[in-house]
Length: 171
Image (cartoon, rainbow, N blue to C red; front, side, top):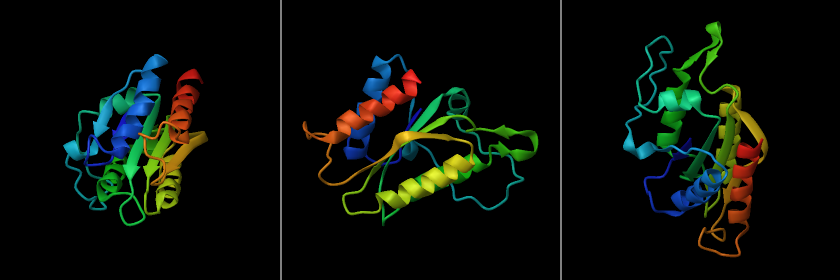
C-alpha cells in the first residue's frame, strides 16, 4: 500500500512515491495507492467504543506487507488529513483481543519539506505507527528538502527510494 497525503496527484510528493511504486512493481510487488484527499476523514471525537468508519481500502491494509506514506509538510508537521487518517486507524485496534490492524506491517515514510519540519513528521509517524505495531526498517524514514526534487537526475533520493523498495520486497 502506498499513501499519498498530498492534495496534488502530480506534485513532488506524488513523484517521489511513483519512484517507489515503479521499483516495487519491478520487484514483483503489487501496489495499491490511497490518495487521502479522495476520502473524508472527519476529526476523531475521542470515542474509542464506537464502530469504526468503513473505508474500501481497509481490507487491502489488512492483507498488505508494507505501507509507504508520502507526505508534504504543513507548518512543520503532517497535514491534517494524515493526522485524521491515523486517528481513524485507531478505531481498528482491539487491544483486548490482540486484533491490531497494522501489527507486523513494514513502514516507510517519504516526507517532503522544502521549508523544514520533515523530522517532526518522521518522529510523530515513527512513534505513532510503531505503537500501532508497525515495523521500521533501517533507512525507511526519509526526508527531502528543496534540493532533493525528483526531477534531479543526480539526486540521491531516487537511489534511496529504490533501495527502500528493495529492502521491503527482498526481505
